[in-house]
Every structure is written in C-alpha cells, then in structure tokens.
Length: 595
Image (cartoon, rainbow, N blue to C red; front, side, top):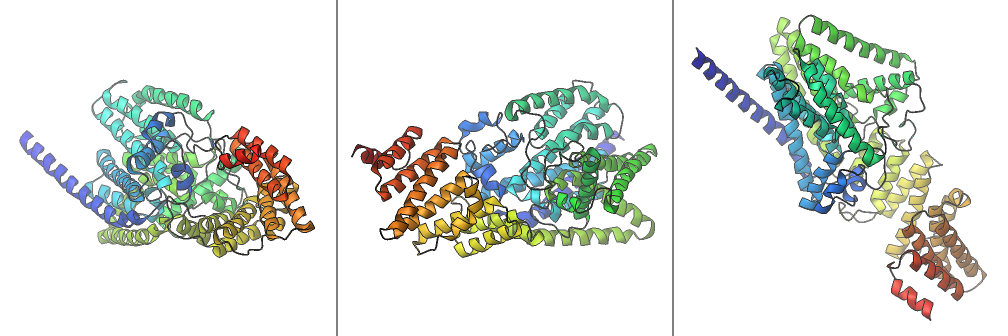
C-alpha cells in the first residue's frame, strides 16, 4: 500500500508540473509583446537617472538610500533598486533585458501562486485556472509590464514565498526557530524591502488554515524590527512623507473616518477592475474615483458595507470549517488594509495596487463560480473560464503597447483622464525633450507647445507647465535656429517673475538675452540686455544648489559681455568659477577675466 501511495503521489506531482508548465507558457506568450517596450514615465527619473544604478560600486549605498535617489519621498525599497542595478550595471539599461527580467518575475509569481494554492488544498484544476487568470489579467499590467511596477511584483513574490514557508513550517511541526520559520522571516524582510504592501504578511499567516501559526510571530517581529532600523536610517522616518503635489493624493489632512471611506471606495473600484477590466488605464488612480463621491455619500456607505460584509463572510466561512475560502476572503480584506488609508501612507492608489490582493481575489472568484455551477450546470464554469482567459489575453496583448515609451504612456493617461494637466505636461516634455536613453523620436516642438498650452488651460496656475512651455520655445530657437518669437515667454512666466521664482527669472533672462542679441544697437537692445543681466543675478541668488547658481552667474557674465559691461562680466565669471571651477567654458571665462 505504501508503494501504491508513493506512486500516486509521484503521478500527481508530475501532472501538476505539466499543468503548471502549460500555464506559464500561455502567460509568457501573452506577455511576449512587452519585450518590444522601453522605459516609461517614472522609469526615467527613478531608475535611469538614479546615480547609483549604473555601477556595481553603488550596491552598498542602496541599502541606505531612499527609493527615488534624487529626492527623499519617504519610500524605502532597496531590493527593487538592487534589481534595477542588475538592469543598469549588468545590461546597460537595455530595455529588452529589463522587460525580460520583469516578465520572468511575473511568471515566478504566477508559478508560486499555483504552488501555494496546491499547498493550501486547492485542486490542480482550480489552482491552474486561478494562476492563469491572474497571469493574463490586463489589470495587472501596471505591475507586470511597467518597469517601475517591479515593486509590486517582488513584494507579491516574497509574500507568496512566505505563505508557502508558513504552511511548510506547520506541516513539519516546527517550533519558534525552525529553518522554514527563519525562511518566513527572511521573506517578510525582503518583501518589505520591495514594497510596503508586504506589511500584511503576518496577518495573512495568522489566517492560514491550521493551528500554531502564532509560533512564527517572534521571527516575523525580528524581521520587522530590522526593517524599521534600516528604513529610519535611509529615509529619516517610518511613514512615507511625500506623495506628490496633486490634490487628493495626500490624505493626511482628512479625518480617519473620511480617509477610511475614501479608501474603501478606492479598494472596490480597484477590485472591480480585476473582475471586469473596463476603464483600465496607465497610472490608474482609484483615489480620483474615490474623491468623486462626497464623504458619507451613497458610494461610501456601500463600500463600507461591502468591506464589513467581507469580514463577516470570512468569519462565517472559517466558523463553518471552510478554511480555504475563509482564508481567501479574510486574506483579501487584510491585503486591502494598506490601501484603506487608516494611516495615511501617502501613496497614489494606482491600478498596480491590485497585484497582491488579486492573488487572493482570483482564486476566490474561481472557486465561487465553480461551486455555483457545480450544482446546476457544470459546463458553465468551464465556459466562463475560457471566455475570461481569452478576453483577458486579448486585452492584455493590446494594452501592452501602452508601455512602449513615455509618449504612449502619457497618451493613455490622457485618454482616461483628459483633464489631467500633469499628464498633458508630461506629454509635452516627451515631445520636445527626447531622452537619449530611451527615446528614438526627433523633437516635435509644435506638438509640445499644444500639450503645454492644454496643461495651462486646464490649470492656469500650473507653474511647471508654464516653465516647460518656455523651455520648449527656447530649445526650439536654439536647435532649429529659427526666427522664433520669444516674447510670449514674458507673459507665460509673469507670475513667477513677480514672485522671483529662480527658474522663471532664469528662463525670462535667457529670452531677453537672445532677443537682445538679435536687435540692432539702440535703446531697445540695451534695455533687454540690462534686464537679462539683472534677472540672471537675481536668479543666481535664489537658486539653492551650487550648480544652478554657477550656471546663472555664467549667463549673467555673458549678458554683461554682450552689453559691454566688462567689470560686471568679470565679477559674474569669478563668482561662477568660485562655485564650480570645472563649469563648461571655464577656460574661456578665465581668459576673459585676465584680459
């Protein structure tokens, strides 16, 4: 009998392996078009421009560096940064390599979901259906295809590994310090170092079927304490301190009840995208949908009722011995906690936040449909599964092109949010300032100006849009050497000039200098050059970095030279060289000072 049991077990494992291999092949084929994509949106600033991601020498510094590098936004995700180091130092930021790594990680999550569900007691068919539906769902693209979404993929990967370790530790009857328990602690630490969403892992472990999971908590506590020490050292705080300057992104000013209501509405909007991916968009922001309903409105009440129903339903299922379904429903409610804004984490509730909750929602839906159809029409479940896979795969393959580059990404955001002034501004930057690392197109200044004009039209006080519109016009005049009328810059930047904003002053001074150079000698030319000099000097005094200040002093010297003011020219050049001796053109500046 023992030999027969071993043979059956071996056959079962072999069958599961073949099913899993088929699932992975289908998901890989569906995601293959992403290998033609490049870097998009946040990829440029957070990854390509990060100073420590192009050489292996920066590996150690990443453990004590905030996520964005250029500015501290209160996010600590060093494991993701180390994976980007492989992209940069290992492959020179070849987009095909980055997307290959991204796809392999997504496939690993799909495979681990299958393995976890089998360990949980789900049949091979149900586990395969769940893994396949998760793998081809277009609502996952913000994580599975977008390089910046690797945070969610890695975090989910370690959450699944941790849950598998917890099940294995219980099956082996481990105590507080067994090898699998230590492995669970390591997974928890690595998950947190990938994204804060992994903070729910201890509660998920507690909900797992069986008793004795509390024995894992000392190790989980040690891992969490180590993470907090590293985090505080890197970002000078526990909670994220920054979440952008857009309205509705930071909820700290709202009361806890209001935040919870908004979070509930956002959660169910995100979950709805998983079930019926209509309205999926790059950078999908559920908080915008959440804020569309006044606090205490019908949608908020319904969302709160649904969340309460989830908790009650999980308790009922667990009390009736339906441990798998109870874990999936309760775990889903727990995995939504980081999105509920009970503590304002300062995160934009984007489409990719679906990734970890969907690991539990997808098998829950598969089991619900299978259970309902088993009683009446068994073929219904198979038909529903087939339709869902085909539709998901079709939409996914079509939407992968959204992540082709920065332009396609911004255009998709605008398609979903046509009144998003920031998206219009980002599209304008893409058109006029191709990034040499990722873009292959030539500057399109007319398209850029239309985009910036639309951004300012939607938000007249949007300073960045006005500054970028001025930059694009100056760049057009410089590159194409056209007889471009630079006078509108004065109007665009009027408010910034009055407020003595250094960028506005600097750009307006450049326009004055170029206009003055084209004029014939006379009062008008003199006035332009004098104003250019004065504005460059004022901008230099307002800039907070030595490089920007040095550049402004250099420009002031050029304006003074054009105007024939030798003393002012030499003084400005000296100041620029004091701040930055190796500034471009330093040799010529020194010769001018010595003459």
